[in-house]
Each structure stands twice: as C-alpha cells, then as structure tokens.
Image (cartoon, rainbow, N blue to C red; front, side, top):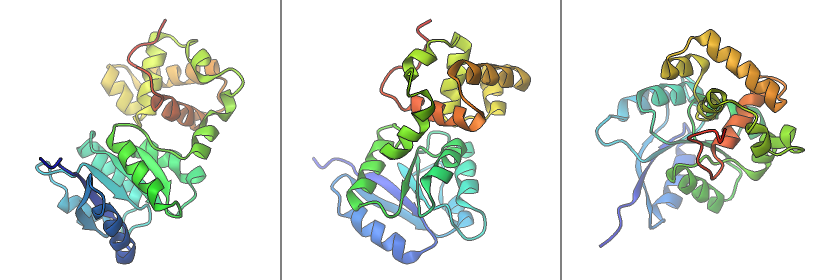
Length: 223
C-alpha cells in the first residue's frame, strides 16, 4: 500500500520559481504539490478548512499585502497550519519576524534543493527549522551559561510564557490564553529578560523561538 504524500502549497509571485519548486517536490516519494498561488488574496481564497494543505511555503515579497500579513492571517484562522518561509531576504533580518507572525521555519532561496526538502520535512514533523547560523545567533547571548541552566531560573508561570513566546504568540494572545492582563504578561516578559540576561524584546523572541524547538518536553518547568 502506497503511503499518502504530504500536500504542499506554494505561494510565490514568480511563476518560474513556483514551477522549479513544484518539479523538485513532485519528484519526492513523500511530497506532492497541492496548490499554487501568486498573491495574498488568491492564497486566502484557495485555503479552506476542508482540505487544508499539510504545509504552505510562502515568499515574503508578494503582490499586494506582504508575506508577513499572509502568515498572520493564516495563523489566526488555522493555528495548526505549518508555514515555511522561502525567501531571498536575509534570515538574520527577517526570520525572527516571520516566526513571530506564525511561521514554523525560514530558509533562504539560495540554499541547495536538499536543504529545502529537509526544511519542509522538519516543519512537517512539528519542529521549527532554522539554519545552523541562525540557531547559533539566537543563543549567542547565553552561550556562556547555557540555555538550560538559565531557564531553570524561571518560575513555572515565566516558563510557560517563554514557551508561548517561542510558539509565536503575542503578549495579547498570551494574556487571553492564560486569562491574565496584558500588563501582567508584560511584567513577566520583563522578568524573564532580566533573569536570562537578554537585552530587549527581540533577544527574548530569538531565545524563546530557539528554545521552543529544542528536543525536550517544554510542558513544565522542572521547578
């Protein structure tokens, strides 16, 4: 019996780029192109609750609204829908924003075909995909003490909020999920930054995103 292939949707405003990715993906035994779109409105119109793709590959430069707006829209409507950004833009500048918007990975277009396929499969497995350089960048401020040691300084509430930040949730969303005020969440975020020795909110998002993708159970703080 042939195993069912994972369905991939391609969103890129360059038809030749989509065609090249489609040829690569359709040649795989475990993947197939489910749909293609060239702009945000077209993508939103095509994605329905019934028959969702298993993963959406999204370029950031699209006609009309940006890829960031598309990611936010789809994440709000379908929180469990995996999205992987495939972009020409420098990951050091844009990966964090993409993950915060709801994407589960970021890969640059100049990467080799096998790297793209590995990124797709990584995200399909429920993990976050980032290049090794980007992962190192996220942890560079805590390289001395190690992420695990620093995180153990957090209370149970702070640990849960760190995990939700790493999953791409905003302070407003976290407040709703935990039934707390936004002011309380912001206070916790400030305490987390202080305990982890992080400079600002951007560093906190980088740390949380990388830590959420580490191969361990983040359900509870050991404390």
